[in-house]
Length: 344
Ligand code: DAH
Image: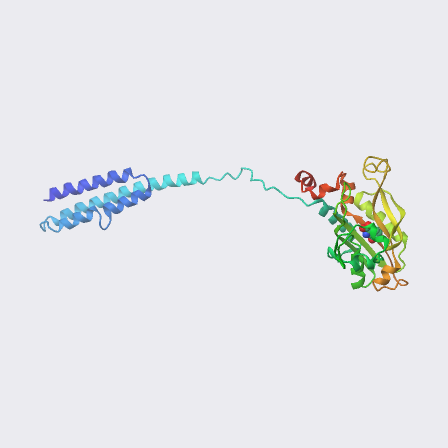
């Protein structure tokens, strides 16, 4: 009887050993362990059979089973160690990270040239003591025209082709209404710069229906044309480069008296004459003048006590001159080949 039992135990042991060694991964191996050594495994049925053996043979059979199980546990551990090592190696290989490889490049955006120029001008003016103010693009007729000494039905309205929203509102044609807004809410002395988008019913190679301006306003006591010229000449030097001359030509704006147009020496040819300045050596950059007493009065200031000067520059125009751009429409076309040239 014991011989028969021994043969059975040996055969299970051999079968289990062969299966353990052939297992391809640690999971299969574990399942085999359960199959042979587990609570309902092959050895358990042998143990049950042992119950029917004569009492003298039971310990012998029991010993045989224990020896076989112990040996199999050993084989299992060896196989498990080998498979786990192999699996770890495969995992490390598949997850390998080469930290010396270059990263995936992230494409970077660039500031729009209009914002770039507007910010630069605003920065220069704030260094000169001007605070930044803004206003709405849908403006009242009162602030955009009437307060600026352009009454209804006055011929001066023809200077600016206008988008009317209704009888009392327009898409602002200039940043000058921010002069009115500021003087009506702040006490002088005032030094403000107001950048922003403006709109005119007008379009060709040098005019866009939507463009940008920056307005400057200085209100103080005893302000003169000399202060205005000094301010603008200094500003032009900061923006285009020091050493460029400015000149002031008499002109007309309803909200200033006297009024002038400002030219600066062409930054491209330094005044020698080139295609950009139509061979004249000079380029017009904006308008300016001493604030008209009617404007001061409208905004509630005593024109005997306070004087002031104002100026307005076109942002796109300043960018066109500084960067040698040949068509104002490029600013609104969203062509990345144009825009990316301004990335830093
Ligand atoms: N607002 C004027 C325009 O759009 C520009 C301008 C001229 C502004 C003279 C001023 C100024 O403040 O004093 O044509």
